[in-house]
Length: 304
Image 1 (cartoon, rainbow, N blue to C red):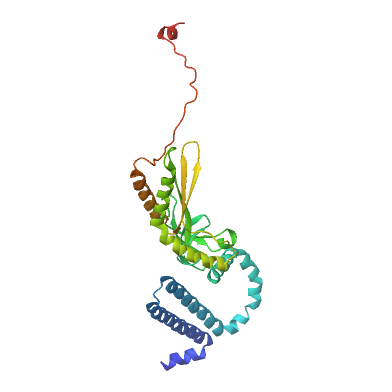
Image 2: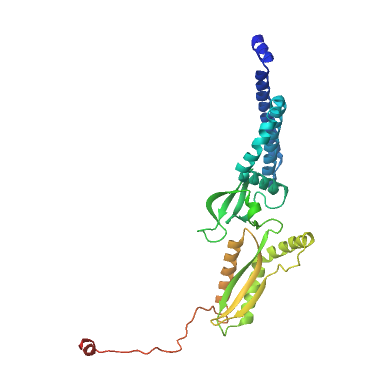
């Protein structure tokens, strides 16, 4: 045992390697221990995720710091070489560098975070992980109607935050204005039709309206934006075929499909129970002029 100890002490490179290995093992052990202890006391999923990420980054930083301290004399001779190679490396890895810069911008700002629903790089979905180079998204839409998962996991480069707009559906205002249109026959009771749509909206989305109003008040104080109504509105447009009623309402960004189903179900029930005062319309076509029709007998067809 003493012989191995003497060899290690007499050989600086071996000693440096031993110190690096021991230090890395110690840092990783401490990192895993701290992460497991903190995860027991953090109930919020988003905070727990961000805490784990931060602990991992601190651990990797300490490992790099340890290596740089132990090999500081050797690194000094590499300064000139790294300076010359730096320009070439930066050019070759410009996409990687931009992605890392994007990652730092994401963490230090309110662009988006894990759990947000975003549209970025033409991909719409929920952010499930923000890595150093890529953001992982659980995609929604495409061949699936509505805001439902389609099962694909997409990884998008963080550099897209500098190249294209990032649409966030759930950042400061986790609600969306949505709209449904109902065609009503001419001659129906329009006042009753408006009441049906408005009453159904109050019954289904009134809770969303009240909650959204509180969030919107915070938005008005934070941004230069006008105050907007979050309560349901019914508008009428008369066209060539029917009277079109538009119901505009506020809904949680994750509940669009379910709320729309509830609204249409209750509207159908109310219209059917209106004793014919309100009727749904369908497309109609009016034939204004008959084209000339020429009829030939068999003798005329067979005549040479």
